[in-house]
Amino acid sequence: MSQWVRTIVFCAAILPAYGQTSSSKFQPGTITAVTAHQNAAGESAAAGARYDVSVKVGNTIYTVLYTPPNGANGVEYSVGFDLLVSVTSDTLTFNSKLSGTTVVPILSRKTLPEQSILDPSKAPSQYFSMKQQHLSETLDLSEDQQAKIKPFLEQETGDVGQILGNPVLSRKDKLYRWEKIVQSSDEKIKQFLSQTQLAKLQDLRKEQKQELKKLIAEAKAGNQT
Image (tube, rainbow, N blue to C red; front, side):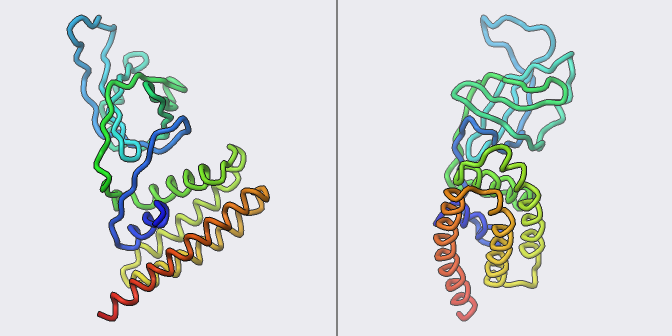
């Protein structure tokens, strides 16, 4: 089963795993911890406070060394903050209102177990981020294309959020309705795709449709037992 369909299954009340490897492209991250940096033996003391900031990206937590500009200390209160980051072998890049594009060194990284569960409280925002990244990587979208389809993905996220948060709907109904929403969204974004990208999208949907049929059959069987 593809990572993307597993994500939808999670939102429909199953708990799948979701893993994500780092890349040079910007991707969603969440600040999970902030502590004052302690200088190691032989490490020169820098002017002003520095912080060890842990950022969770996919199933990896990166601890980076951050030096606030102009002595600002807002980072101390940023645990839980979502941001877009770009990760390389030894640096992490993000955009800041205070310092603009900021590159910080990675002090350490920790890979979480493969069964890392998505946070239900952040399901809508994670749905949007993951859908956007999924299409961008699968179809090799340009920045201009991403900007043009963003409003339609946001609408899709809102529509999906309504059905996934509806306790009256069964899991089977949620999967059925999700498929219809995605079909409607695809119709709106295909005008911005090249023929090659459109062909990739159609192949992707064929694969997902087969997986959804299996999931719906399983849900139907489960309701009968």
